[in-house]
Length: 112
Length: 112
Image: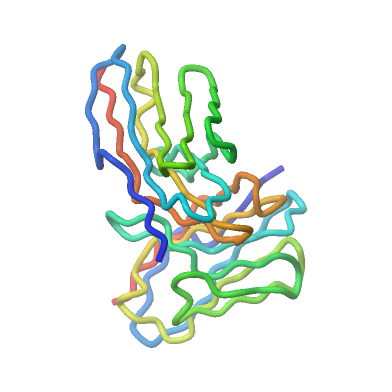
């Protein structure tokens, strides 16, 4: 099993550009999550999904969108990149909401 | 607003020392407490998921306790080794929410 994979590993965006961060898991987990991690701060939940076709906002959803068309994939979309979105983004998944979460390797995004 | 606090922020110990750190969380509506270990340049990995007051978990030299009435959890490392150097994250879950609220972590450095 590859677990949770994320692409790209690094990306530099100009202000106003758009991009999609990809996340895929091969563990057949229903629950998937997107977090951002800023220096000195804990992981903040952006969006989560409880299954294909069902998504909901986390703590910091503004400026992001998600979709969940399959169990495996949970892409995160930035429509108009802003410097405040410079961060490290982690995707995670779990079998059940009370279970441990499995994290991907992260995407380091810089918006200039 | 749910705040999860971890202390200390960072800790330097000598190889062989035992150490512990604290995670504090609101005790009302408590559902679960997660501990994760996060090595530099890797992704967070689950150590424990704890739900019951008085629960104790152990994995090798690492153990954790939970007090849900007063809202804290301790993580203990016995005989620290350089490979224990990492950031240790705790996260709390309230009610049956799908959301984990993370603390900002305790960064442990074990000197050989």
